[in-house]
Image 1 (cartoon, rainbow, N blue to C red):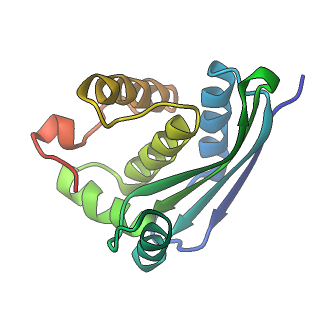
Image 2 (cartoon, rainbow, N blue to C red):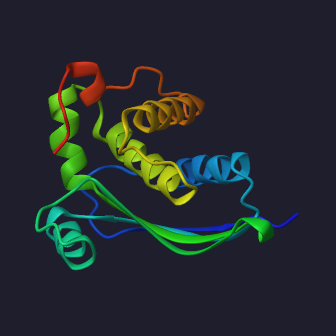
Length: 158
């Protein structure tokens, strides 16, 4: 059986990042969603880099936690190609706010981005609830049970 190729790069290095752990979770999400072929690239960057990408591609001149870019998708062929960019600098800042490890926050961003690539959205309240449940499900598979975040603290993200 074919399996999507996962490519992970860390251009920043501020937060310890277990690429094998992340790749395993990405494969699980893709498998659960019926993706059997393609390439998913994940890149860990700093805030200036993600800010530049956010401004260039989405018109938002500010750093963000995660960006997801679908390059090609064909559900009939179980094909998905895309890129996820995450900021470890933002993960460090937000993890401190939520009192949990920055590594967990960064892994959450990776899962969030991949969920976007496979079709989940978080703009409407019901969609956001489903996406948060999926994030918790996949992080639990990585042994991360208690998930901190805006939902848990009554905060809203930027």
